[in-house]
Length: 457
Image 1 (cartoon, rainbow, N blue to C red):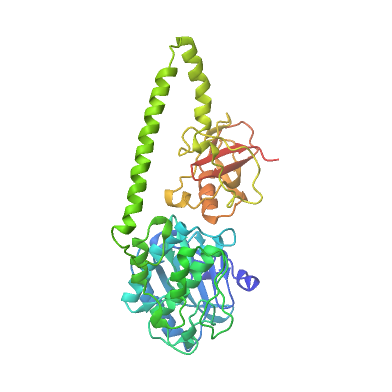
Image 2 (cartoon, helix red, strand yellow):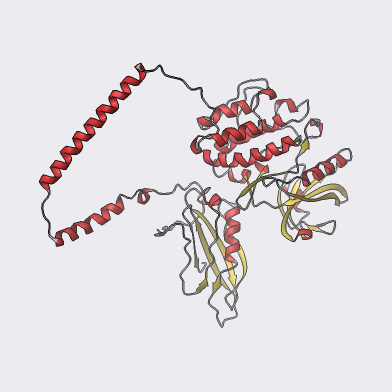
């Protein structure tokens, strides 16, 4: 299908939306990078779908409804209409452009429990907003979890009124609840899809059932236990047994950071006096032993204490200094390489006294090095060291005139940050009018970002 859609690159839709680059597609839709001059947006996304005469008016009405919504975690729809490509009728919708989707992250690594918690809070807030308006998302799956900057947003071009017949929905998939085969869409269907997505985000594989009628879902062994009970509730075959978005949101907010989505357990009250007597005696004994040991240690130190010369004190302090440094827990922590690009060059990592500060290149040929500013929420997603290399062309005045990604790394978002920073580097001018090539390497870690320039081979 990629070959089918890419042939339309360069076409301008209705004289206003150029199809600059093919982004993604399927049998029933294609998404391209475009622009939206009406709001001075140099980058926007345009989705194109074949027009079904029986569903055209309903689809445009759904997009109009979605465009009227206002929520910080919903993608804004900017324009929609009819067009023709190759003599065939199509519908199009223009929306905010997202740098990355959850479906692009999961092939590289699974999310941590805390990351899923951070994903669920804005997701459930947006779902609760939709459900209060009697609207349903309909296709809550990894490609529709999008990232703009450091903010998570849900796609909105799939939103439908609750109660609509499922006959107009795309081909049935694992993310659709059992009742969707011969029924109507509902808010409970979104909760089913969310349960599937949570399992996939944490384990990189979806849950399974032995057969279509099986009541018990088979969950991957790698699913963290704190999520098991909630996932099973979300994946109940009876829609009435699934929790609401509001219930889940309140539950996650109550849960500790490292114990997100755990089901509250009943409080067991121990019988008084008899159960408390043994722990009380144990605590008293521990305190007495600690006091006795402290007195013995104090007396021992007083007996062994001898006057020391200033010279011996200085030498002992010098000897103790490296030992103290080696005992610093930070010096033993080596970052996990889960997000390192497979083709990243292996080179030593510079240790900075203040890891939160970015490090720039000190080469005499570099007059100014721009280091990407990474939001705190984005830096927390990094595991280990993430490398991005950008090849730039520099004119005789030292300005970058073009750039290409030499090594994009595993994340589109960080590759975009590196490319934007590379354009702002400044090099020493030269009398030679021949353009020069430089390779700019950026290293992203949780502690900070570094960058340096080298002559490419």
